[in-house]
Image (cartoon, rainbow, N blue to C red; front, side, top):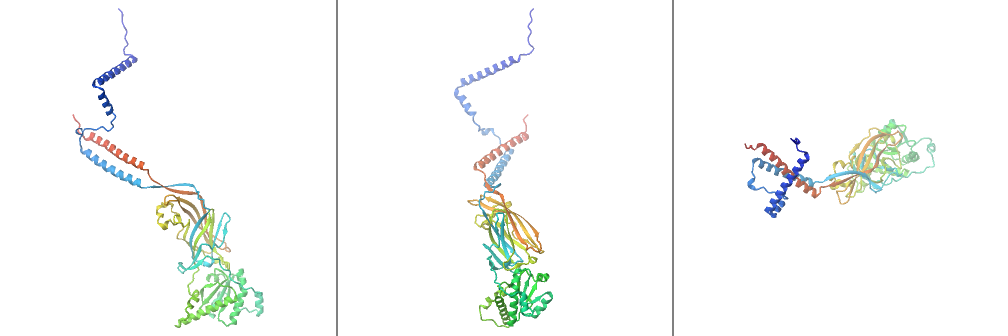
Amino acid sequence: HTSLSLPSRPSPNIACSCYLVLLFTTYISKSNAMNINGGSTSRRRAVGSADMYRHVPKEMTEATKIGVIMSLLSVITMFVLFFCETYAFALTKITSSVEVDENSEQLIRLNFNITMYDLHCDLVSVDVWDSLGTNLQNITKDITKWNLDLNGQKKKFAGRNAEIRPVQHEEHKETMQELSDSVGGDMAVMDLDPEKLGEFLETFHDQAFIDFYAPWCIWCQRLAPTWEKFAREIKAQGINVGVGTVDCVANPQMCKDQRIMAFPTLRWYENGKAATPDYRGDRTVDALMEYVKKRGKNIERKKQEEQGVTSKDKYAANEFSEFEEEHHPGCLVAGHLMVNRVPGNFHMEARSVNHEINAAMTNLTHRVNDLSFGSTDPTSGHVLHMINRFSNVPEKFKHTNPMKDKFYPTYDYHEAWHHHMKVVSTHIEYLFSRGTVLYQILENSQVVYYPEESVPEIKFRFDMSPMSVNLTKEGRRWYEYLTSLLAIIGGTYTTLGLINATLLRIFKPKKI
């Protein structure tokens, strides 16, 4: 007989072909059924399948306690997030960036207000130097000075920093030796030392006039013949005034005790005590004699007032007012300078066109009341604090006056403070309709020691940074805000819906 050998399992190709035939047959059957029911029904089903917001009939829904809790939690969550998002939308964020400074101004205004506690206004000099070759000494424009009282407070306006008038000197044909020889070697001026000074002031208790000098001082050398002739004129007119001199090189401690800060110092004494201010007039015999007589009249006026006799001259008080006010060598110097936008410095030191400064007695203890850069325009960074707009600047960008109200004492002579400042311009775009520029300062100060023959000076070194800080205010767009609100609503509803469904599966009893 004949036998057929069949494969133990169908071929993969045959199985796949049979599956495709089955799918095709099913599709044809469904198509025929749809044609039988009509085309309108099929179109409705096609449109219905595009509905993403299908409605569940109310009778098919079920309220649960968990659902109520989740609904309340959803409303509260959306309200809190909505409030936070609206608050964030209302706020703006300040951003900063560092860029190359494009400021085209060649000059920048430097504002300062400094109190010198032990330097007379007549001796204060303000100088400016920079790397472009600018070297200005004793600047007078836009600078004012005020005398201080004994408490270091501003007392009397000393005037603008005008040029100091050179005093008049007499020209003499005779030398000091010739003047001495002309009277047999006796000098009318008494040379004083610490031992003789006390006796001298007792002898001329009411009035004495003393010249504190240094032999190397050119002004003292020019004054010496005039001072001798002045002393002889005093004796010739029988005026009871002692005229003396003190050599501060031979008697340095004595001059330190008398606080002699410049040579020559012509000091008047009454009742054995110094009467300030010191004489700063012309150095001629006539001018000195006029000063002595005026001082004498003032003493007589005081004696009459002590006896109850008042002068009928209403101008007498004004005539002697310069002798009545208390005097202190301190000075407040304030003003502004226009400096180039290059490395430089401005410094303050003791200088006079009529004196040689005593370097051993120069005390530059000071307080910086104000030191800042910028114009006085209402929109400038320098005056933002005056118009209550400085609070709109972030705290970390407010370093515009780091030395304000700082005290810098010097406890020894031949030393002074040097201040180093790095100036960074900061551009603020959001305070006014046009940009505002303020200048931040990074400051470092240290004490510098000077040789004994050098006059110390306070230096304020400044260096302009080539980079600038730009501050801008950024807010959110309206469409970002709207997108966030929709995300809050949808995200909260969906998330809590998933949580609700999970809880229902866990806690709802299962059917058996």
